[in-house]
Image (cartoon, rainbow, N blue to C red; front, side):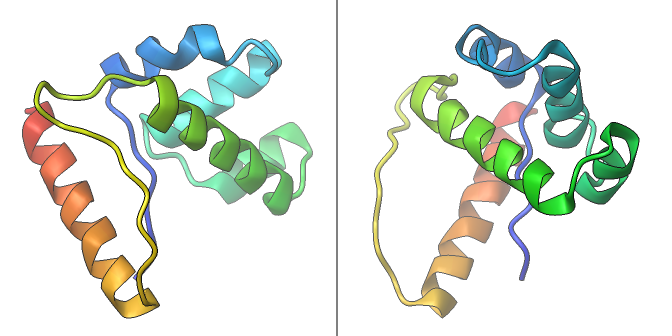
Length: 103
């Protein structure tokens, strides 16, 4: 099961001030990946970057979103270490909950 990192437009807007180290074109690319769902490989081709570089950029932005982004009221963020098969289930559950709360 692949973890699809997605953010609502509002959530992405809430972290933009913390993306100051990224070039404007990369912030636009991050928005297209995280909000619009554009594939990382397509962005890599457009920007002339490796897929690994785009993936690293998305990973950095994702960490920023976890640290500074909006959280629904009553939610909290924590880090936990689990066996891979359990971690996949928890990530999927978190994704479902985030999708439902954004509606």
